[in-house]
Length: 315
Image 1 (tube, rainbow, N blue to C red):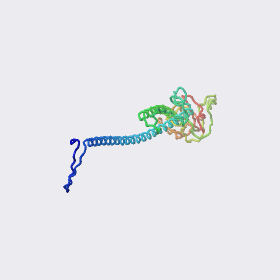
Image 2: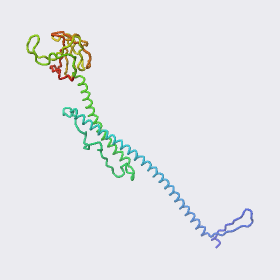
Image 3: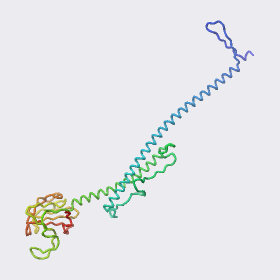
Image 4: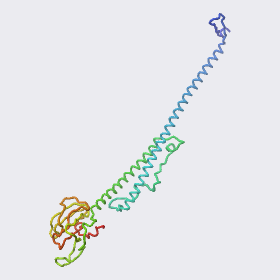
């Protein structure tokens, strides 16, 4: 029985009376086991608490990252849609321009209509992106799979980049066409070279010297000697000298096979090689060469063939 108990002596600091406590070994063992159990449970609860706190913090961070990523993906999709709308407007505008300028002929290899395989029309029609679960950045109830969503958007951007390159080619064709048309208009004779009276039109007439029916290749515009003669369009002077029959003569090459001839001049104010603009003074009316009075003989030739100048005069 003596070995079943432990004696604990309590000695006060200022008192001589000593207290003795007997503790049964079994209860001491139970206490130690209970303490160990409580310590184990407390340690487990503490570790679990720290784990939960870490998980909550990680979830909060992931949620914030997911919200930020969703916002970024939505912003990117909005930009993609804006680019798509812009490309659609460019496409419709180029179609209208091609229809107006008749650039649909097969010789120029220009196609009218949307480029590629798109069949939708109108500003509200956009290429639809199908999302599987976990891929849609607009869904608030599911996380965003950034790799899949980015892949889909990258594929859509690649398609739009292809469309943009095709539309750029079309717009470049249109630009070249309008530049060509601008040059053509600038170099097409379209105004009277001088003011006066048309005394002899283009066509067959009786020659004043031989009294025979001959072809008159231009217009005779009578006016006082010294009246200004203007260039009817842009071009380059290729001749400026005396010429039999024409007297003092100036010839301007306007490109595209078009030339204008000015005869019976008093004097020339230009020389060969000069660049001339529409309305520029190039000479004065005279009576040189084979002429019966002061006037300007004005011709328009296309690939060397005389044309009626009136067809080229707009006013």
